Image (cartoon, rainbow, N blue to C red):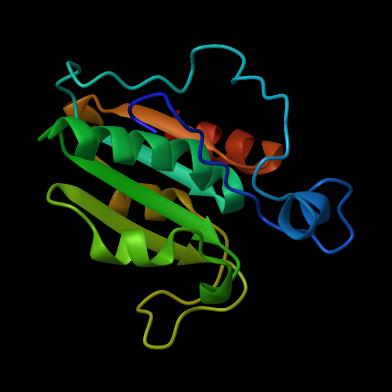
Length: 162
């Protein structure tokens, strides 16, 4: 929470996972947890940064990037954000209603890798350099870019961006 009084935890349940079924099915209000924050400073966006922002998320990698989107809204920033969200299918979308509602200056593009949404202009497939060029910022805008997702996804997207 913005006031520091509570923590919101996003959990994607994995059927054969070791931790997510417990967190989704067993954890109840009042249970005590030990949490550690992220390591490093890579995912820090500051409202005073005037450059446009490109967020590229793969699956649950959207979670830390969503924190930036919420922080932007909370401070009333007018810095333009673009989110390219790669996910398997429409059914796997995190924060669906919140992203559909959107916010001024936030553009969201969904890239479906296995099953495209009905009426989607782009067929299902992995993210490409063309997607980043079409839905991201031109390099001369010198955007701040944040990429989060599975290691292979991050490495591939980073190589495309370079």
